[in-house]
Length: 152
Image (cartoon, rainbow, N blue to C red; front, side):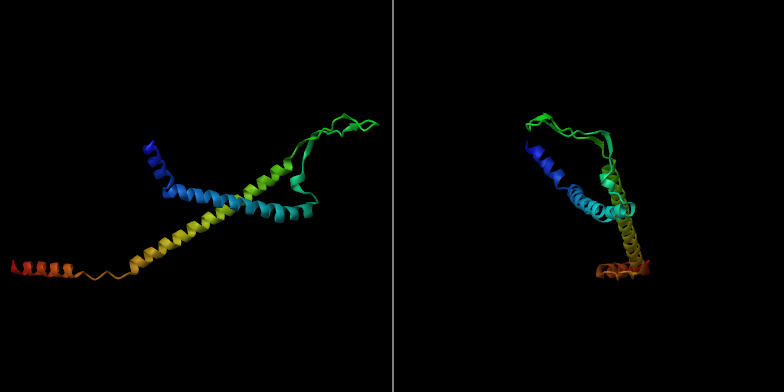
């Protein structure tokens, strides 16, 4: 059992697992923000332009019925809700997905560009940096080598 716990600790506290967990949490929060942007900002504009609320669009497959009450107030037949196909909610979710996908694409592209610029700058800095001065040991060894060459 102790070996299992040690293996689990090693797995759970690796950098990649923690990074992934943070990414999932931030992704969930980001999804809520995008859903709010779509639901609270974009869709009302679409509703104003087309005079329809997209998320309320539905197709009635089976009509509902109201409750039937007799003269004494007793319910004779219970109310039945209509059976609907809520394609508007689906369209809303598809729009959310596309906006999230575009935002994530832009973020990943920006990160990749920043990484490429950083690597390019590091390469330029490495190329422009002067050669380091030799250490005292290297200077001494060079002198010894030169003296040995002279004696031959």
